[in-house]
Amino acid sequence: MVASEADRQLVERIRAGEADAWQQCIDLYEGRLLAFARTRLQDRSAAEDIVQETFLGFLKALPNYDDRTPLESWLFSIAAHKLIDFMRRSGRRPVLPLLTSESKDGAARDLTGPGRAASSMMRSSEKAKSEATVIESCLRDLIQDFKTNGAWERLQCVELIFVLGWANKDVAVRLNTTEQAVANHKFFVVTKLKDAAKSAKIQDSILLDLGLE
Image 1 (cartoon, rainbow, N blue to C red):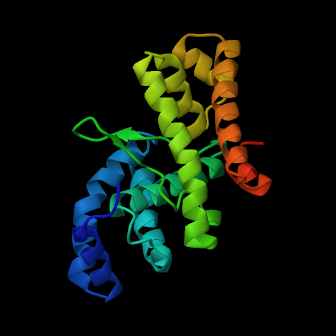
Image 2 (image 1 turned 90 degrees about the vertical axis):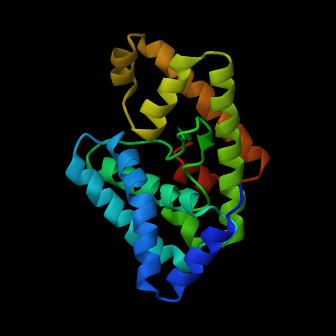
């Protein structure tokens, strides 16, 4: 998916310092970002803080924004990174800030984009985009395959382990399965992602950034 003309015009106006353009951006995405954060955090106040940090992060990262990227994807990628930071500070260790979510029409929505992590934003936009695309494409294919084959337990494991940072034993209790089954699901997904990254010659340091050690 590429950015719409409306996205490009809105970002251009924000870059030009138009206050009404910035307010329009907030009006368009604040509710969806808050809903996204609330599905992963029980604390509404913390979710609101995540949204505020997301918008601030967007402004700071604006020079790196690729006009070909949908604005929604870029914002959700920043939100995912902020959630990762929050959960790590809270003592949880999410492995990957990568997962697609369903839009209102049931289509998969990319939540990561080129800015999936702070380290990516510091690299050149083209290199970051290439790295992100490899991982996102692999994960998107895996998730679609899980849905097609009805592998709902494995799909739930992806969210609980890789997004929310739950421990294997907690996931096992939540899904009413064994820790070994959870470990098998995790191993399967991590192996696929590592294979995709290595095939694309993504550096080991980037694999570590993604938690694929």
